[in-house]
Image (cartoon, rainbow, N blue to C red; front, side):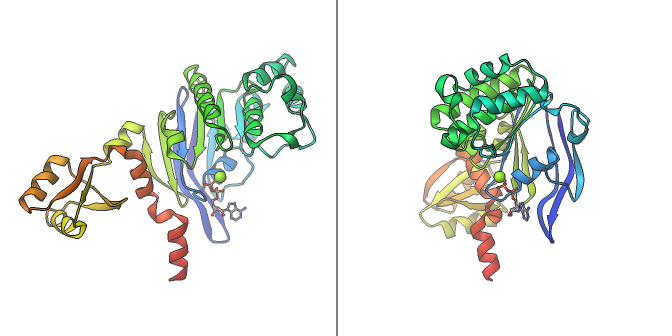
Length: 301
Ligand SMILES: Nc1ncnc2c1ncn2[C@@H]1O[C@H](COP(=O)(O)OP(=O)(O)O)[C@@H](O)[C@H]1O
Ligand SMILES: [Mg+2]
């Protein structure tokens, strides 16, 4: 179990991680979702003692990471798959890891096999690995010590679609055996298909969290009219808030209510449906004011 408590990191007055609280439970895959620059990597680095928090703390199984003896046996980490000695082979990296953790060397072949780097690929130097191969090796390294907690920062980057599916299966199985997985991504689709819990972060702050189903419930109704301005007026008159999504709006009311309102106001609709497409709209909306473009616009103003 990972416990993130009031975690904050500031750099020269800029708050990269702002009072973040969440837990990551055993037996579950927790998706840590946010656009680039949201603070995912900084949060994960603070979990494992690579970045010192300005305030707050993270415990893993009740302990600070720095206080865990032989941490690789308890916590598997993949933060930057390319942060490996380029001149070593995959096999060498895992062998060094196994020796450091006091593991039988048979683990090395098991892990190479698990991530499909067995045979010649395991004996190639990492400088000649594709990003996808580095991610596979990183996953093998994270799993080497048979830890009960996995912390993976954007592990799907560089994997091909088959590789992403493979990883999803691996993480699902790992969690089903009781492990806790924290998996970050800037892509909703990657997280949505495997996560039991989703934590959404934008500009350093948690903007939503819950199971995918819980987050979907808050998505309301997608509605679009030929004349969106008239539609918006009609909704506002009934105190229904609506946020722009794509070429329509996500309104905080059910379809029946919106249908009645627009029918009586004689507003022809082009679309009226549960905003089920859903989490994606929610994600874009929740993080809308945290996107880079908005930041740039704000800076220019
Ligand atoms: N060492 C640092 N010094 C200054 N700013 C940093 C440092 N590390 C990260 N940041 C800033 O903190 C914000 C969050 O970065 P990061 O955690 O890498 O986001 P993510 O992983 O979600 O893309 C970014 O604006 C980034 O530029
Ligand atoms: Mg990152």
